[in-house]
Image 1 (tube, helix red, strand yellow):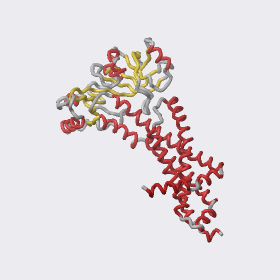
Image 2 (cartoon, one colour):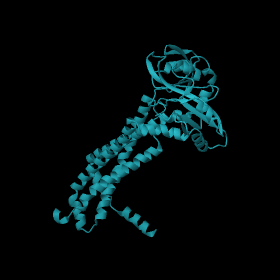
Image 3 (cartoon, rainbow, N blue to C red):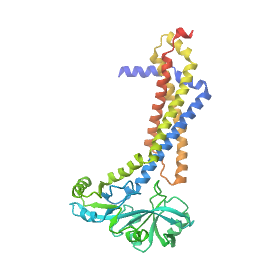
Image 4 (cartoon, rainbow, N blue to C red):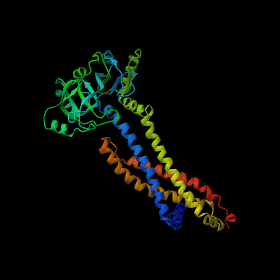
Length: 396
């Protein structure tokens, strides 16, 4: 403990050579800070987009009121689930602990924007309104509306020009549009939000869904939603279902956590966009390493004689290396501040333009700050090799 106190006191008495060297040429310092801020902004934006990618594309999964899901093994993600026989739902009811097993339909379709009359794609979700399928109070309060023919609930978070249409629905006015030459009435609103899969979504009854998708057979569904009785563990019941349905090659059993992870894994490993966001973070990190190295390397070269003089005076390499690392940490801290400030503004701009949930979180701020420090320390470690090679005999 006494040794630690002595070390701290020694550091306090130590001349801040790193800061003095950096601040000696303010123009070079500002350029360095701008470069680090740029690298931080790049990392912030890529991480923000990546998180929005996962959050928006799993938001539907997390809002479903079910403990276990049945889906086709051929399904790739929520947009391409294929079909499973409805009889698998009836078979699931034989398993102890299963309270209910209901089917859900999902499909993409073009509809006319009720405000602009332009066609755009939306995700349509159909289920039995007598059995709530979502843990969304706003939807569950309007289940009776879904029983009306050709009536849907519209996602107010849909990307596009819908402000006037939404206002009319909120005022209780009838808003109609067309889907596949059928007149559709927007009977209510709910909040889900746009995603990378679809600009928005519609919720309707299973009967209305079958009218909009005449090729969809009622004997098959896209997704099976299984609710459990109180006191049963989802993983145990899921294992029982897998054993019971083991001979069938047309169904996969997933718990809710596994269903969310299934979708996340698809976007992270099987799509180009997930790879691009990960690559963007790595590129921002490497850009920062190169920029900081160039700054520190230039500074070391400019003061090589001074470093050699310190060596001639008896200072060890450890002291000289600490000066370079001091510069690296100063750059990391000062460069991070404008980076996070600019990223706040860009997050707000992106959120308003795309309706994607791009928010700054404390965890992400800490993550990028740590990456920035590591980035600068790596650059400092590379730059210190020149300090170690400083020889007073060669300098004078």
